[in-house]
Length: 304
Image (cartoon, rainbow, N blue to C red; front, side, top):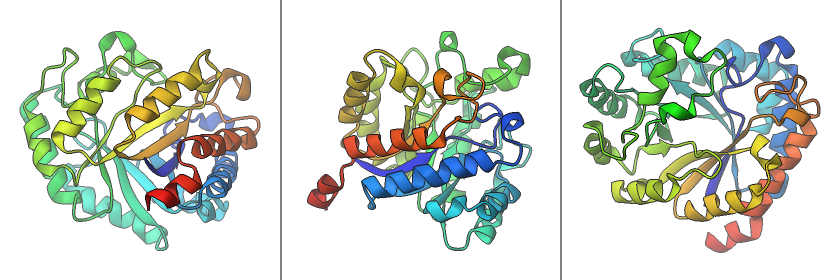
């Protein structure tokens, strides 16, 4: 069931929010505030999470606090990939957490995406799983490994400049514990040792054929906590509700953090999924509606 709702994904990453269209982040701050209020109204038991930031930037968080956004979330989330994309060593994880805690003393800090790919060698990923567990599992309340499956090459990665990014782009396709053909990598059994304390972050595409396989693998691994997403943009596709219902029903046995993000063409400033919404209250309405459908307050009380 849904334990938490994340408001956007990596808002300070140009691949997910266009800063040229929101240079002072005031639109994002308003989007967070509107969505936080809508989620709380739909079910105050659902934890509200500020979209996992990447890079980990305390100045960005400070600015959102000044703009009032932090008043409407319970958790500040961070993402880190020190062996693939970040310019800092994996051993600095505790320091990075401390930097964010210092500016949000009244909020929990979660690591909602952390990963090490097998782009160079599977043995590197094995080291990454085990060292991440050592550094983070007893440091923060939630850690989500990115990801269960490799991203199929033909699907493409959601980045702004795609192949022009060079090896940074191609690393996206090697972050899973399981290869595209369904066979496990060396790191899978090492991850198993750290579940259920370590969760999984797995995006599911619209009508993703891997959904049932993912559920089987996660149950086999002993995963308890899952992070995934429901795309606002997908809610404008034909048949979207049937797919959302199927996805959330399949994931019912996990404690799920659901991420709400991605702007529909008709709702954005420039007709792109990274652009700020012209009406943040429309995004908030989507968030509230999804909580009412998949985590209604009455049901949460009954389960408790």
